[in-house]
Amino acid sequence: MSPVPERRWETGAWVVGLAVNRAGTHAAAALGDGSVRLLDLADPDGGPRASQVHAGACLTIVPDLDDRGFLTGGDDGRLCRIVPGSSGDAAAEPLAEVKGRWIEHVDAEPQAGLRAFAAGRQVTLLDRAGRPACDPLDHPSTVGGLAFAPKGKRLAVAHYGGVSLWWTKAPDVPTRLDWKGSHLGVIWHPAGTHVMTAMQEAELHGWRLKDKAHMRMSGYAAKVRSFAWAARGRWLATAGAEEVVCWPFFGGGPWDKAPLELPGPGSAVITAVAPHPMDPVLAAGRDDGMIFVAPLDGSAPLPLAGRGGSAVSALAWTANGRSLLAGTEDGRLSWITPAR
Image 1 (cartoon, rainbow, N blue to C red):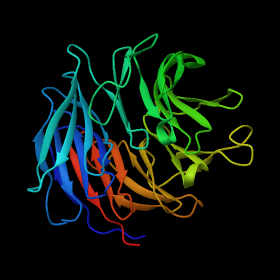
Image 2 (image 1 turned 180 degrees about the vertical axis):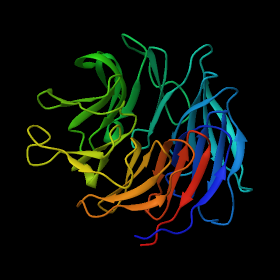
Image 3 (image 1 turned 30 degrees about the vertical axis):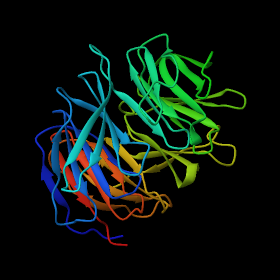
Image 4 (image 1 turned 90 degrees about the horizontal axis):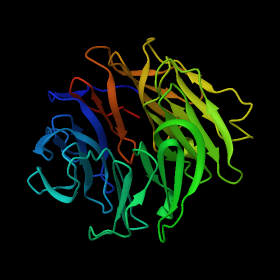
């Protein structure tokens, strides 16, 4: 890959999250001022269109169940659905509201036809029509993260002391994965075989589900705020160190296996990672604003955006892997298209 000029806009607010809809037609950036910036990916000359969605800060954004939409949660206690309009702007439809609570964790799973959002200690499941699919799911402490398993048959909810695993068709008593401490984010392995969490401390924790075997990954310089599966689940790519640390999930790993460390240019702490959806490379952003692409074979990294501004807070590839979206804490929104 070689870089092309970065298209950049200053939004004036923290880019909290980035998502691309399931059709791959639009990208959306959730901002700390409660607005969403929508980009038409078929219009490279067009800029982002703003839509005010939340009264306070927008806290999270994910693709919705269908091909077009997005879901956002805000500190105004609202869950909203965003749909790109024909004129390039976005229409926002409130799906739920929990007064006095933040909606910071949201997910949607099209095969199950379910959306999930957390408010305090409770998680609510909504069906395609936006109706509650069951009674709210209670947890021992404020929810720190949630994620549907592949195909949506199970839902993992992170909280203090571990993770609760619910069957989504008939939630009853959850299976508990215990580990002392606050768990602030959770993801499933693409094969549904492992569950991983980010901890309040600078480390990760995980479980192999067939026997609940533990794995603890520590030694990071900072809290791990970003982690994702690369190369169809062979590697777990993580931020939080001066190198992109990739843990092997093959050949008996990660137990007794050393991680792959991808240094990239510069030496600031990695704050965001985004594995390419097709190729064995990943994008990473640092806390000095630098963005680069690193091949998983350890060959030379390629800078995509230089230092300047503040930490990279969000990264997202389009589904075809042709464009990378990036956002920073000081409001820089970038659309980068590396040449192949």
